[in-house]
Image (cartoon, rainbow, N blue to C red; front, top):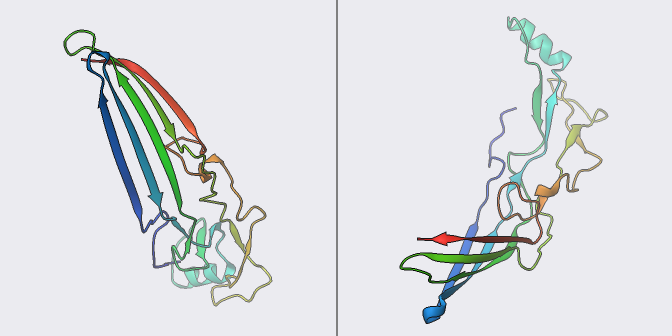
Length: 183
């Protein structure tokens, strides 16, 4: 009930290597080419059965101690907190911007950005659902000492299980186009 260790989403390493190359083209404007290499180690997770009911042994201990009511549910940890790690990943993002001089500081621009340019589809998070194993020995609180992995344990359970360029992304290569005016 009181695990120690890394919280979920603990990440040991996160690196960003970025470069920009500007090319002035005189009266035809200028172009900027950019590359970003994102390197992330895996985040942590633990084996925890969420929202499990209070056992009869726990209920009896609470009544004997004089508690008027009991918790609705409990989380049962079967590993140290953050004892396991998802896979890390590396992706490259590329961008190109073109500015056209029109009048003084007024410059229309066009931008193309490719996130995850090489389409890295590495599974970096997966389902970690576990349930108590009812056939295993129980401890003094009546909690089973072993767990069973869920039927989809180890599989992706939504699109956010792959490297994404930003919150709400679905993973895979993403193109973003922009146009506007700078002044």
